[in-house]
Image (cartoon, rainbow, N blue to C red; front, side, top):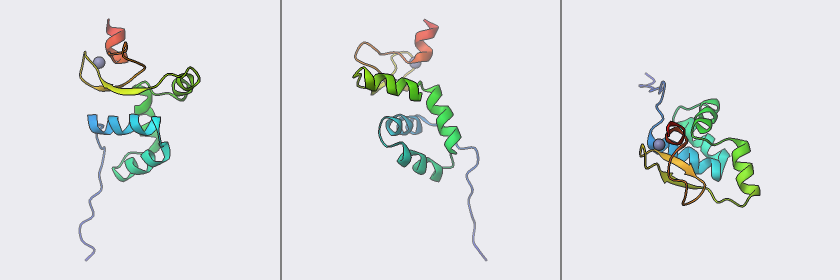
Length: 99
Ligand SMILES: [Zn+2]
């Protein structure tokens, strides 16, 4: 018999995965798409998740042009990893808009 094949269905975006996505989008995007596919995430899912985290192509490009160095920080509001544009930026988008 062929043994048991485990197919991961509906994998969840954990804080670790979020961090991977952020790091990947700031660095080697191809590698991160490949790595997450092993985890069961489609490219589209990763792109959507990245957008939710505030990582859009436009945003990254804008930061590159302005010489902004993006780092990963933990939000002071919700403790989630997010992309920070500097020391002044300590809240994720969600917490910022919530006030
Ligand atoms: Zn937050």
